Every structure is written in C-alpha cells, then in structure tokens.
Image 1: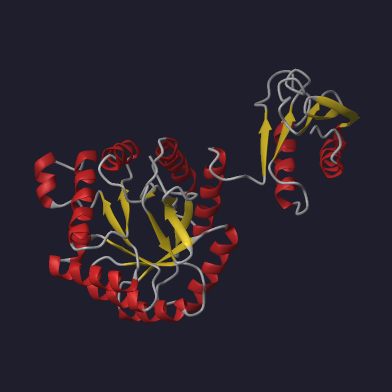
Image 2: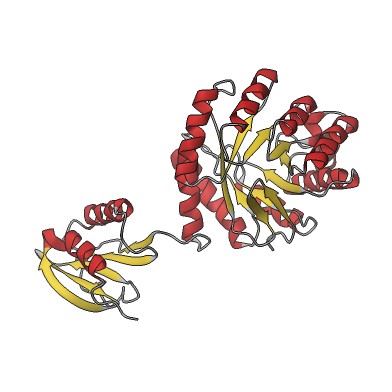
Amino acid sequence: MSSRKQVMVRNVPVGGGAPVVIQSMCNVDSRNEEGILKQIGELQEAGCQIVRLAVPNQEALQVFSRIRQKTDMPLVADIHFDWRMAVGAIEAGADKIRINPGNIGSRENVQRVVDAAKEHQVPIRVGVNSGSVEKDLLQKYGHVTAEALAESAVKNVRMIEDMGYDDLVVSIKSSDVQMNFDAHKIAAQKIDHPFHIGITEAGTVKMGKIKSAAGIGALLLSGIGDTLRVSLTADPVEEVLFARNLLESIGLRKPKFELVSCPTCGRTRIPLQQLAESVEKRLTEEKDLPEGLKIAVMGCVVNGPGEAAEADYGICGGDGKGIIFAKGKVLKTVEEDQLEDGLIAAIREGAGKIE
C-alpha cells in the first residue's frame, strides 16, 4: 500500500516504491547556527537522510538560510503559524516545508505558501495531529478520533490539490498507538501521496522506543509509510539509530549483521547474556567483516548448531568449553574464554563457508 506517488527532497526520493527514508529533527536552539551544524553532522553520520529545523521567527529564518549554504543535507523547514516564514524558508533553499494548514490561517495565506512551493518545486508536508483537528470535526465526532484525524488530513490535502499543487507528503500523528494506526488505515484508502509516519510525543528513550516500535512497525508491516521519524525525548541521534534498527528488524534495511541468541534456561552453563552483548559490541565495532551475516550465540548444545543451523556462524557453550559452528557444521571446540575471539577468527577466515 506504499504510495505510488513520489516526491524528491533534494536528492532523496520519498514514496513511489523508494526505500523508507529516515529523518530526525534538530533540538538545538533555532538561533544556534554552530550547534545546529554540529548536530546535523552527527545525525548524518548516524544514518539520518533528512533533517528538520524549526523556523519560528525571522532570526531563525536567517540562521536557516546560512545553514543551507553550509550543508548538503536535505533540510525541512518546520513552520507552525507564520506563512511568511514558510515562504522565506522556501526562498532560502528549503528542500521541503512542514505546515499544518489549519495553523497558517486564512486560505489566502495557505495559497501564498503553495504558490511559493510550486514556483521553487519544494514539496509540502501536510501535518495533522491530535492537537490540531479542526473545531467542526471535533464537533462532528465529539472528540479526537482516528476518523477525525483521517478526515482532517484528507480535507487539507484536497485543499492544496485544489490550489494546483500535488507535490505533497502526508503526516498524521498521535501519541495513541491504536488511534494513530487506525487513522492511517483510513487515510491510506483515500490518499495516494507519500506518508511520513511516527508516534508523536512518544516519550523517553525506554517507553518511546516501545511505543514507536509498536506504532511505526505496525504501519510499515501494513504497507504504510515512506519516511519516518522516531520521536524521543532524547538526543536525536538516538532516534536515527533506533529507526535504523527498526527498519532492519522487519527487513526494510539490510543490517550489518543479525544476531540471534537464546533466552537461556536451567541448562545454561556459561554467562550467555554477557557473552552475547560482548559479541554484539564486537561485531558492531569491527570494520572489515563481511556484512549481512547471521550470527548465533547459543547457551548449550540443545540450542546450538541444530536449532541455529541457518546461522552463517555461531557459538554455543558448555562446562568450561564451547563450539564454533557454521551453517550447522561444527568447526572446532575451544575453551570458554576463546569463544568470542574464535568466532571472529572464523568469520574472518571464511571457515566453513557453504556456497
């Protein structure tokens, strides 16, 4: 159900069958040019593909304009109320703008923004969230509902389409996972534009990741979502890293490696949690290992080569010793404290590789 339409955000395709795009938003003061540039660099290194910047006033707009000249990162200008900031950001080189038409004011003001976007061929992200549903829809449904959110999104999209512009990305956000999912399911039947997905105000790192995994993951597995932001009360780099992990976990990004490990039981005779975490850290840090491998760290022979036979390489422990295996075939037996180094060596050597 992924969008058949596509927009270009600078050099990044969104929708139309393109891979799901990861984005985040700078949380540095919008006037802090040096801090924003530093954070953009950190986000880019973490794998972020699009960065959004708040442009609330003229001072922030001037900073945005200077930043645009100093980075090739695709930039989205986040506008809440002032149509003049939207037009100014477009003229300053924004690659996309985010507006909530209901907050921009009159239809005439929205038209001014649309005209500028059309002239400069800048996509518009049409945002709707639980706090911005129009009063008439709240009266119609009694309170914020999935139906109200979806109808608001469709209504605003149709308004901009009627103004002669079709280069749109749709964003429906709620902090309620079920409502967020239902609203997207409704809107996706009526809108063919790319969807920007996420769970707004998801919370701190721990709970925010849980809610985001449930909400974003459910949408992606339903075929909805062309670009995403994980919204955490944390360093935005954390958002990007988790977004990548999420996409990898459901097969939408190729991981550097996949690690599987058993949950342990009364048979376990090695410190498996510590070993698995150490192997994961080692694999993450190693620079010259083959990518895309499936690695198993198992607690005993019961869950060793047999149950993890599909793993490219693996280890499992016993009493003071353990085995290193590949594709279900035992390669060697080593002392327990040599399991991790032996695994890395086996991967490097390509031992036991089955074509």
